[in-house]
Image (tube, rainbow, N blue to C red; front, top):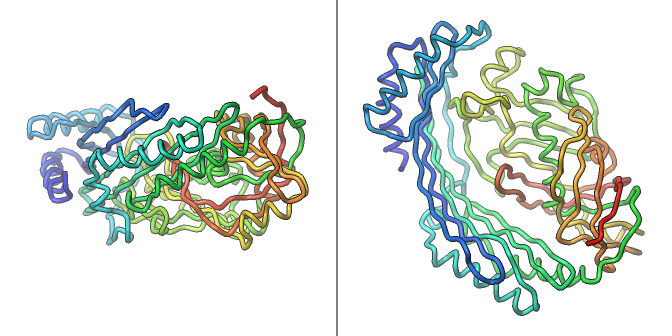
Length: 444
């Protein structure tokens, strides 16, 4: 469903909501395709196309939301009426602000790629074949997926907000398996043509080959160098701390106050929908323009992200980070960017006397929310560094670590990479962290 079709649907639904004091209509449409494989055989090939509308109705500062994926007039009328009726039954919230009036926005360059939107199954098959060739050449087997997708959103409301966006995305995620070791690599882009599947496969096979016959090392405090995939898995657990809701509830590490130094001076974090590696939607799910926002500047936390509700409640600007209503998470940063350093990842390794080089983490879980303490495992490529060189694989370890402490004793590499899929995506360099705490080892 293209933007003109979404806008026509949105206008029809909004016209039906005259009995509400205020109303908002979100029309979404998504097409996605995925080829999953294991042991050099594609075992799942799926494609889905979804479209639907969500209506938020406000009556006397009471809010109701209803959704439907049936876009005929009768079904939309039913959903609109249900949203209004739910609003009349909901408790009144005196803090409810008027719906945002929106503003002028423009999609960042590269957010939508027609070649990705029209990518055929044969293209994903050829990318899988390139991965299979790399696995067989290395005497390994692989498992993972290749995906392509598009998503479009149109938001209109009775305050005048009117915004539309179309984006595309593609990804390769592969784990190579050797006799007693594994290696992981990934690549993501809004342009499928930018992804070199063979190169991704070679990176993964190289890690699996280099990690064979892993040795055990003692747990304790280590110097670690995390690839972006590992650091992204860790940092995403800090993302919700920058939500105005978490901040307001006292569950964020920065609830004690903004404009205070929490991290090392070299730590810079922003939320930037226009970053070249991860261009995204320039407005939020209320249709309000999203700000390119510094969250951490030289270790000092400057901002939390808001939507109209928390901007009103906290007396802060609306930064345009609302999620679709209703949600229990509050506003969220959607396009995190971790600032780069000045040295290459190879230099960081070369300057390490003894440490661990880590490709990714797995099964991370929160231990202490406000202190941002998490626990998890290393996985798919953990290596020993001795005298500035990667000397071989080590068995996986469990860590128990405060992310806040990581950011107080870290050094970032100079090259940024987009990492993450499924529930998050961010831009990050590799990072060297001192005194990373491992609590136990494994037998694999």
